[in-house]
Image (cartoon, rainbow, N blue to C red; front, side, top):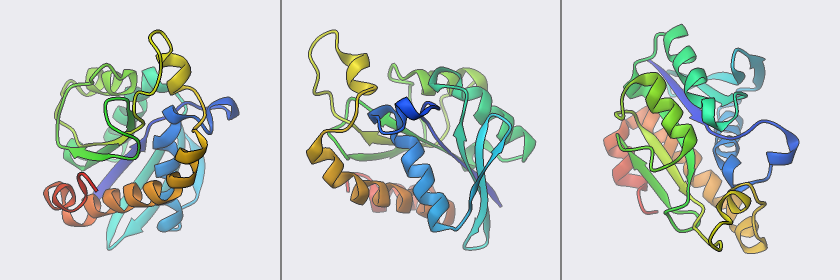
Length: 187
């Protein structure tokens, strides 16, 4: 069985520590956990490893957020991975900071990365893991907030939250989405 975990973010050092790149941070933690180094490949950086007997591909797309679907579709097709074995990890403004929400389907909720994936896969039915970044910004400041760096209090809590999200993704790989949702949602 093969799985594809796609952490959403934007390439480039200027985005590395921003809220919008939390998907990359979770992907990096998963790759570190299963000792799978990232290598430059088609549509981004790809890590390939095993977790409890299952083959896992971890992707950090280099397409920028609004074209993430191209990368996800390419690797699903190339490796012949069913869409139910795909996990998209992304930031979410509608959830309080650090909140974990795993779902089997849903809308893009205005998120350009999810919109691209939905367009490319032609479905809203694919697993996703949303990382709450809260919405602590003034009217008209959403882009600056999302592309802004974490606050000090957030930075202190971030390593523990990233670890939790990594474990949730690996639980999805090993135990399936229903068990992972039961174990991790809201934690």
